[in-house]
Image 1 (tube, helix red, strand yellow):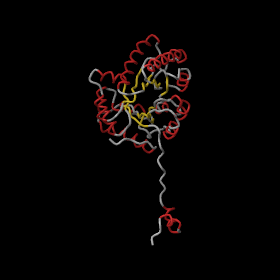
Image 2 (cartoon, one colour):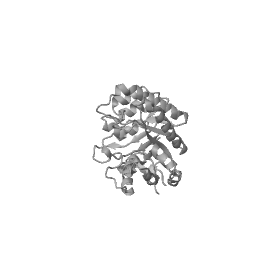
Image 3 (tube, rainbow, N blue to C red):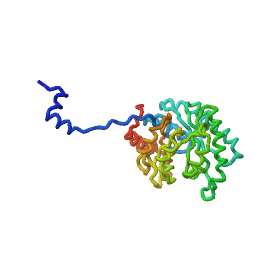
Image 4 (cartoon, rainbow, N blue to C red):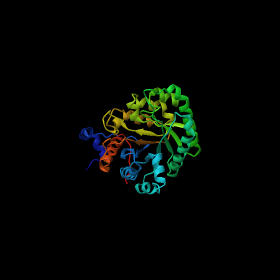
Length: 302
């Protein structure tokens, strides 16, 4: 008479066999989803349909573009058909803006509102605020801090009024790049209107610990750019997730403790020698996807 499995395992032979079986740890349950920015396919607006198709085919949950790109396509029929075909929602758009010149603020807000309305039109919720580039050798942050904070508050409030969230993205070469600048600005802005979008690769590049920065600003994080940093010659020194120096496991574990609902957006600057090959660029996105899948994130079957 055959022993039932439970009874079998109680026997000496069963216990030996059971102890020799491999133990597979269950994949962690993740609350956030992962999208991908179109920047990896290049900055030109004409590359966006190609990027949307590739990101959708890889099963990412959302897409990020640029405010200027949405505006370019708005006069040419828009991107709704491309997004629908790829079954891919637009989540956010990166919006580079001048924060250091109070005289330009009114015009910058008008531009931002045009982009914000387009984000909203596609069902997106996040306008990623990119600070203006400055001459880092002569830039005096202390003299510009009040102007930067006032600009951000005004822009954030304007977006809030149309139902879009402003998320500040610290950026290499910009007026908000170093640890002191990030903390000084985020400590002074109105957090009801201005949230934070940490970029893990750029934090690492600037000499910071991305894990600690994420922990420090976790309550106000509304969007995330995930990329790695290896200091190489391609992609401005950045690389796919898991291929560089960023403690991505630590970043993910910190982000998963957030009570906020936001998307993790994979991003990688275009290669300087990029030839426009969809296959080559898509493999970069695949590399990040494999790492994030290993960290417990799921992707869609399309």
